[in-house]
Image 1 (tube, rainbow, N blue to C red):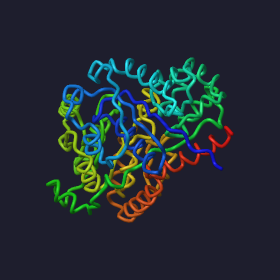
Image 2: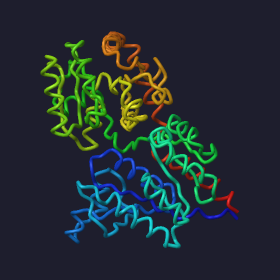
Image 3: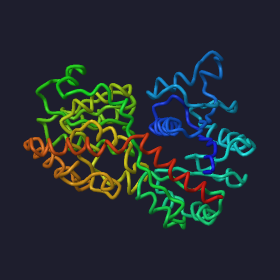
Length: 395
């Protein structure tokens, strides 16, 4: 008889619901685990609205905000409520790990939080750690310490969002058989209704005949979105739509554009998931800032989350020619990979793309095809199969 899979406690110290991309990844991942039959419980800090209002239905609000089915088991622990001071990063990680360690019904702790991961191992509980970061390079001493303990049965393994991140952990001494590369995914429900370019533009009040390059996502400095303003300066005949900025980030970019004399950039604030997809469908091309710094300097953008809805939208994608991008994008097949930090070349490639309808059709068709295997449910099934192998090896 196969051994049943253990109950999994997913520990997150974030604010929910919240616009930060990592909260979307946690919820989509946990919901997909639940959807494929894994027994999971998402353990989060007290949220201010539910802390002060006992009638506030947090689970329903999370379901609505992240566009997921309402059925995932969510537990709020009453410690320091999540807030801008981020004290819950410590207090919730401590409380949640103690709760999981002493709960005999929980077999595995699954977390992206380094502190919770270390505590889990110290408390003797089985651990799965997930990260998109190149932690082996960013925190070599800490990761070598974890790597030296990765051979134990308590350390079930590590889930990495890219092969680039996995290689970073190999350099830190983690056993290869404990590393599982799982690219993130797309929730096809987020892409509904599927719209033609014309339909999307009509919904958004955009010019049907204009040419649009679209970026969606965060616009803080480490995303280097200024590079898109620099590229726009070479292409006055094309409008660049930048969607998803906070007011201060949008003001920073607006000032930057004014200083450069760039008039063909439109800045749009954060939008609900369903509206973001409309902007993707409205695009002639989708772009990821073609710069090296997010991966090489900051290390906080590795196979960016936006790439997955970009692919699902079925529009040409322009991205920097970097190792993480090459894991999913193939030159002139489902994307255009450009030399990082060469904005004049990127502008030239965009102009050539807009003059080549056949290339546009090829890139669009193949991007959509690539996306079909990159769903959250497919990702969860791969994880479940990997976990089952691990559990059977414990027998």
